[in-house]
Length: 153
Image (cartoon, rainbow, N blue to C red; front, side):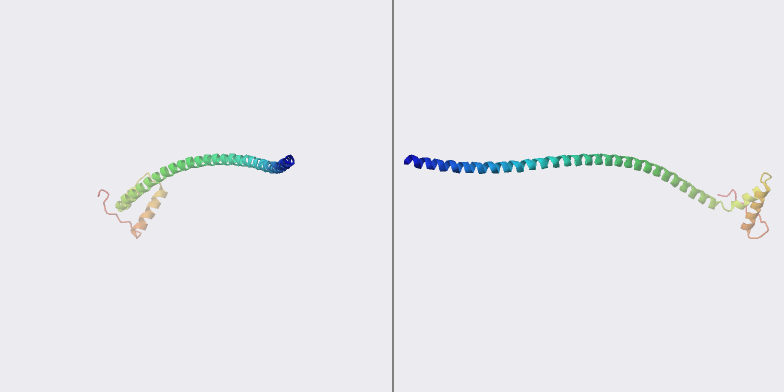
């Protein structure tokens, strides 16, 4: 009878162990299936993300190239602008100085025009324009001799 009791205990232990083992195998198989699916999804995500990374790196390279070209163009345009600005500033300064000189010599204009009017090298049309200009400045039709100040500074 002791053997039967021992055998019953052993049989019960084997049945319990078999159930636990079968259950563990099913759970492990299910877990393997789930993990395999997760691995496949992760690999697919990795491929998709690698493709996106490659596209973004290409886009970044293109943008950096465009930026470099834009900087080069901007530097060249800035150099052109600076040169033109300096040239125009010098021209404006020269014109302002010339206007200042001409304003100080303004009384000399009628005398100079009178000399030109009497020159044989001036065409008749130009002489008529000079006469007209001198008549405008004098205020009357008679021609009056201007003051001699050509050599005063």
